[in-house]
Length: 269
Image 1 (cartoon, rainbow, N blue to C red):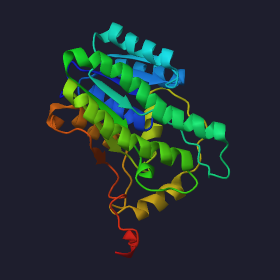
Image 2 (image 1 turned 45 degrees about the vertical axis):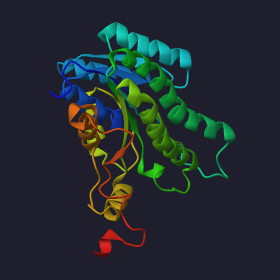
Image 3 (image 1 turned 135 degrees about the horizontal axis):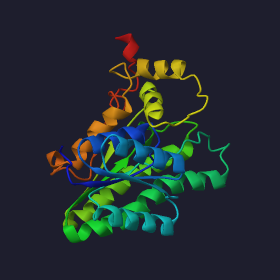
Image 4 (image 1 turned 120 degrees about the vertical axis):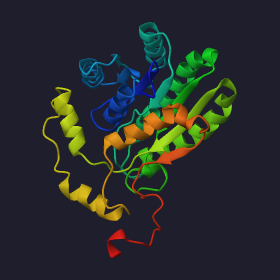
């Protein structure tokens, strides 16, 4: 129970990556404030944590709306008395090229990822500062480390999150607050489906991910994709005292994807 007595705000709490992070933090003892633009994601997430014996509340909020962000942080403090951990995970996919992406969609995707992280970091760390302790974890993507064609806004915003992490870490170190990031990659989908069932959520008809996930797995040096729970384990480590001297850096949970030399194909041996 490395996070016993801690309170964590997590933005973007679908049953996929956010869900894996939430369940790991709660399993380590943290109370959860599940924030999502979709009320079903926030409420089902919180209900599942409570059903498992944990403490949680769900908050529906637009991470790009400053008033809603401020109110969400205030509700977290009112419910649990403090904030110790913030996980900036809110994002959405809209895979388009420069030529195909309307400017309004570019702005929206960048706003959810970058503005959302800025606003929640601004208001959550203001609550951390008087206690001179706290951790901010920004969720990146392998697309933030490398230029992914046909995914221009997401790739750009996630790359911005890397430097946001470093700059915020330098600013907040004097206040006893650490700022770090973790990098997921293409993710195994079975755990998401299982989690949605446990959370009593209907995902509706899903695309057949078999071919694309197999293709991604072949190209990762470890030749298998991580699960959301792998990211959750990393988040628990980064939020805990085990990582007390880690700030301003990124932890990649990507099976070696970013480290892979461009000309080497793992299937070649």
